[in-house]
Image (cartoon, rainbow over all chains, first blue to last red):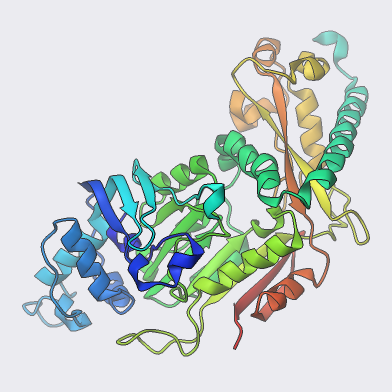
Length: 137
Length: 329
């Protein structure tokens, strides 16, 4: 499961969803893996505005990953300033870092814990399971 | 095997008779259980079945429906969406990073989710219940929910499912600080129609809306309880299943009711007209029944409005009712 996905996941329990404490979920006993994939600069630029930036920074720091810049980069920050004019834009270091964090860093095993109710969701072989026991539905 | 050649019509009767038995007994059971125990009923008559047929089901799900494809391709770059009830993730291959779109698929079946997650790596898939989605409210540009809501066994639960889909969509004017100005998020929902005049299933207006639909699966394992019942068909090789498949399958739609089990035993094209007694003996067909609520005309729109949504566009396509919806004002 990609960290980009974690940016859009919260507790499945209804009463938690409305509380800020439930988002983002907190990783525990996490095993990460890097799955390399081609960097698509246009894609990164287009989803930049959709990222919940402070929460993404929290996720990264809880995983012990390098800290992301405090404020959300602008699309222009993702383009290498040395890209020669007229040629295809090449990604800046910021773009490479973001690509690595959002799309190549995957949570393989572990748990995701709700900060509000403490419920733990298991992640196995890269798939998180959000099914709830009957008494919590 | 030679002695049963040419007796397909007799075999068809056997198949039909068995079919009838399943339908009536299951219908009784459904009526007794459905109202009292929606979740438990669905666990047994929907979730456990998909879990059991996941691999075979997945092999028959590869062709996207045109309206769904068009909806996905119409999403602008930078859209984040959900595929609620993604199954094997066949719609996760329609759009990707090239189109600037990212989708999180979810399904109730862990087996189908694993297939979706490993075969569509541009996106992601999680195991989740449509009535308890683990997503922050009002966060997504779009959602698709294809052939899912008809599996909920009470109207209350179907309306709740539509409400859950509406709840994850961005609301007008949309976006948090720093985001582009966007309209409300939109979802595309597909459900099976009661009106299927031209299908072999023969369902139509005025008919029973809550039905059990069979899925025939041949497993390489020795069969369990149903072995005795199926013995006549087993001796006929794969023929019985083939016949039944012809009976039930609308080839134009991939909401296939029953599929030939022989795909598991033989390559698809080689299987139809060959009878292999030895393999047939090893592979006893199992019939699994899934619960469906067949929507009558206008019912999907009613459910959307009851759930607090707005119907942007709706229609009928090949045995299905569909609607594009957005959160109400």
